[in-house]
Amino acid sequence: VAAADAGGGGNENALPSATLNADAASGPAAAAGRTGGASLAMQLPDASAAALRRENLSMTELYTKYAEAADAWRAECFERKRLQSTVDGMIAELEQRAPMLAEQRAEYERAISAHAEMRARLEKTTVELRRMEAETKSHVAESRHKDREARALEAQSADLSRQVKLLLHEVAELKQPGSGPGVPARVARAAVDAASVVTAELVDFKSVEELQEQNKRQLSVIRALSLDQEEQGARLKEQYQAEVDKIKREAREALDDLESRKQKTQTMVEAIVRQRDMYKALYAGGGAGDAVAVADADAAALSLAAAASASLGG
Image 1 (cartoon, helix red, strand yellow):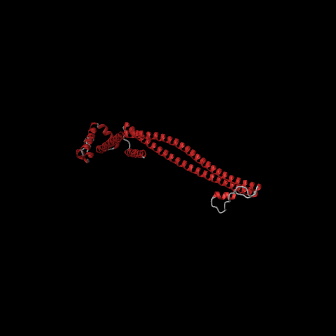
Image 2: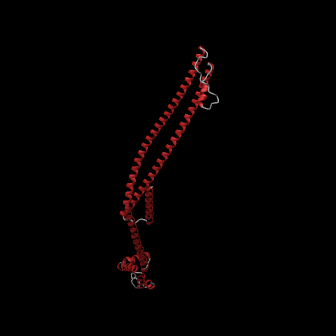
Image 3: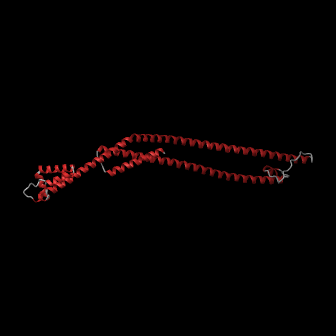
């Protein structure tokens, strides 16, 4: 190299034999590239000389730069081929998964349709069930009310019959003392039966004044019972309304949860479709792209596909 730099009488475009031998020993590919560069320099002496004059570079330095550029070009070609092979593999894998994704999409659409149909049927059935429950409760309440009215009328009939007997006895005693029909025995106050207590306190009487006092007590009892019944009815109505509101709230929360899961699954499927279209566009354009970005995109697509499959399966 020193002899080539110092010799002024020789050809400046010619490379030293020691340099060529070293290039040949470094490897067949490097030797072939550098030999091609030397041949190009020999064929274009004017261009090489002009470059040397502009940059003040010797032929050895120029050849070294050319060898570095050739090595970089070969490395770039190898990297492009590797990335292209990776992208081809990804496209092939996506093409293989395309039927599965299409089947999952069809299954998803069928599930959505079935869900909408079942939801409509559920709502219709729920409305019908609530109507029938309301009718049943109304009939049961009406039946109980009628039973209470019938028992009350029976008790009233018995009480009026007893009072009529007492009145007849009093009339007979006024007309002919000691000739009237037998008087029903008065019920003891210590009786524990409610009907017996009512009979003793509110039915039997000895005089008109006592009958008036019994009527006052009856009116007081009726008002108290009416007030208690109204309060109890209000409490039962509030409890029933609270139970109905709770059922509605739970049903609404369940429907909202189903709607949220449906929206998430649809978003995942759309993301997978967009990912597939991106890969197809990359493959059609022939660009290798950034290896890290492609790997990240592939990992994201796989994770989204797994999540969508799990969501559909659940």
